[in-house]
Amino acid sequence: MQAFIPPVADGWPHAANNDRDQDDEWAVVRHDDGLHRRPSMRSSTPHSHSLTSTPSSGTASLSRRPSTRGPAAEAAKRPPRDWRPDFSMKGPGLLGNLSLLARSRSKSFGGKSPPPKVTICSYIRYNSSKPPMWLDLRRQPETSITFRGLNRRLFHQDLERFACEPPVPHIRLYHVHYPWYIDVDTANPSGVTLFELFCAIYKSMMTQIQYGDFYNVDMNNEFRDQIGEAWAKRCRTEQERALGVRRVDYLMDRYIMLGIQRGRDGLWEIKTGKP
Image (tube, rainbow, N blue to C red):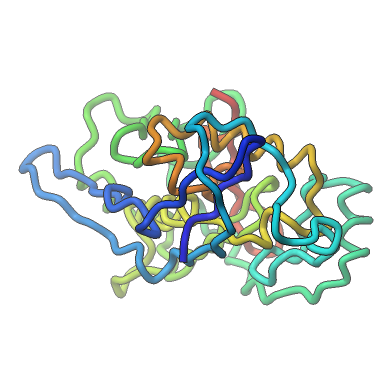
C-alpha cells in the first residue's frame, strides 16, 4: 500500500515505494555514553489507501478533488472508526457539538478516571503563563525537545522519570484539534515513563493518514487546504513529500507541544501552540 498524498492541480505526485520513512524511528541518544534506543513503529503505523496517479511536474499546488472516486459520495461518508467519537473539525463549542450529533457515532471506552492525587510530571505539567516544555511535534523529540526546568543538556536518565506521580500503567491523551486518541502503555511493571510517553506521541503523529481521514462528512475544502498546506510546509525534501500526509498535519500551525494538563473523563490533554 502507498502513502496518501494530496492531489495536485497538474497531476498526481509519485507515490513512495516504501510505506514509511526508515529514518523516522525516534532514536533517543544517551548523551553521556552514545547508546541508542529505538522504539518500533511497525505495529502502530497503518498503510494508507493508494490512489491512481499520473506523473507530477515536481512542484505541487494542492487541489481537493480525487480523480477516480466520486468526491460528493466520499465526502458524505462518516469519519473513520478510529477518530475520537467526540471530535469535530469545527472544534469545541455549539457548532462542533451539532456536528457530533449529526454523525451519531457510538462513544468508545475512555477508561476510568485517575485518582485525584495523580499529578503529571513537572517537566510536562502545562502552565499557560510559563509553558514547561517546547517540542516541535513534526520532528523527532531528540532533536527538538526542551524542558524549562532543566538547566543543562538532556540526559537519557531524565526521560526515565515517570510521567505521573504516583506512576500509572496507562495514559490516554487527546488534543482538541487532533482526531485520534493517543494511548500510552508501559513496558515496565511500575508505570509510564517520559520516554514511553514521547515515543507514543511521536509514533501517532508520524502515522500516515487513510483516504477516509481526508474525505468524510466532517471535512470540507477549507480544512483539506489547511492540512495540505501544513503537509507542504513540513516536508523539506521530495522524499518526505512522497511519504504523504501524516496525522501531525491535522494540527496545522499548532504543532509546538507546550505541556499536558488534566482533561475530561480521566484523560490528559496535550496543549500546543504556534511557533
